Length: 229
Image (tube, rainbow, N blue to C red; front, top):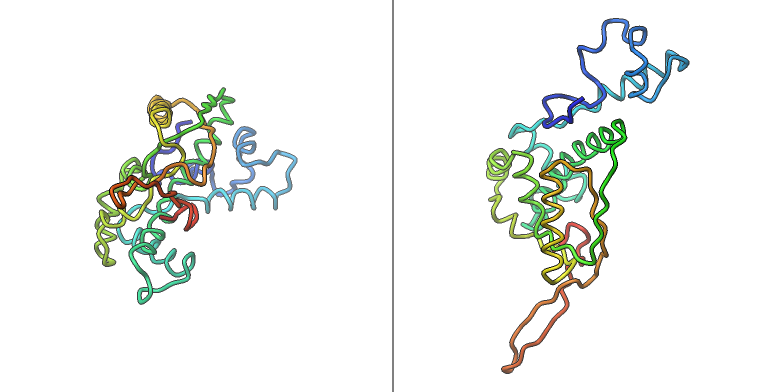
């Protein structure tokens, strides 16, 4: 079974054509296994599993749905409204809405690898200089045009929100950049791989010139949490 590449295909475990009117009676053993149930499971257990599978559909990707999900996170995740939302808050709501769509694909990918019993690559490095993630994620989802339109409709420029993101301070040298390139290559070649490293509090630093001298300052990249500046 192919890994779903967009929300149009629906949930990984549920395909409408797989079931007839009496769905619990016509499931094959393989389909039952994917749902986490067996022939010995009760009818009620099968119905619950099917309901979960059918409800676990991908989020819509159209502009109006993106706008709605953005406002949802403003109101229910950040607990704010239009009157007290600054640009950084808009960046956070945008990042949460993008993360939701990444999570859908991440879960399906992990389930696919588990089903296929794939061996996985574990790449260990003391540093990872991944750069900024938001724009990269939106582009890879193929949704940059839709997000740009949606953000403009709610009063923000997507480019301005990109600038609110800080680089992840997970290293400060060439080793980190090389490690990030390796991970990009593994993803591009469809290898099941994980990167393991250290979550530095101050992985990078700022430099300023004061009184003719170079001064280093810590980079508080986690001051606002994972989605902080």
